[in-house]
Image (cartoon, rainbow, N blue to C red; front, side, top):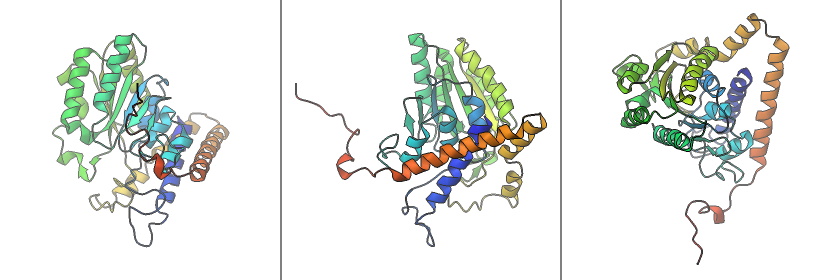
Length: 322
């Protein structure tokens, strides 16, 4: 888990550097090798690794518009993911989707820029696995703001009725874009909403990969054994703004510095060392992660841009004459 957390952080650090290319001195979101909005997940890595450590390639995962940490934890092809973000033809979707629309059928991963969009597909995938008698489960990651969407309640209701093997994972980073949770959500804990749908609601009040791993293990084992869905809410931290370039004027003074002081990655390393893990093993994990990220970025930057003739490929069904 430490290696994946480190890999995700390095990947996003490289993305942030590349994102600002061509965007200074005047910030223009449309410029540079990565145009458009970019949402980083720095600080939320424990949520992804703690859950995905239990999953196989056959299990189905949907993530949000802030997806990199989950994609990396699920084992999405790092080269093709980087290329997709750079809009290159070697990307996961030939460069058509960008960072908010990553799809890797090899490991059953997808995400969407639409809030709460992944809930329904996750329930559908879980129902399909159950009907086919397959051992797989589905996991839907969502932000705490998405728990106020109608789609959230519809998905949990159907999942409970069908006893679908699905786990809903809320990453509570405290903000829906710029709106604090306390200003838009009637309950302090979204996990309390689980009782309305007759499923367990688990609240993890720490951005700790080991505690998340333990909670997720219970929920995932329940889903695999036919026990039905569960809802997990994890209190996590968003070390960056909603998007790169966000001025974060909605944050109280000192909040960003306070969150940086409890960065989960150095905290996890310190605890592992205190528990007797050889620092050389952690150094090796960091080197492996760094090499994979460097390789992915070299591949992405060296890949071709799609040609104009490819713009409509894989967009429409091509019919052939009978």
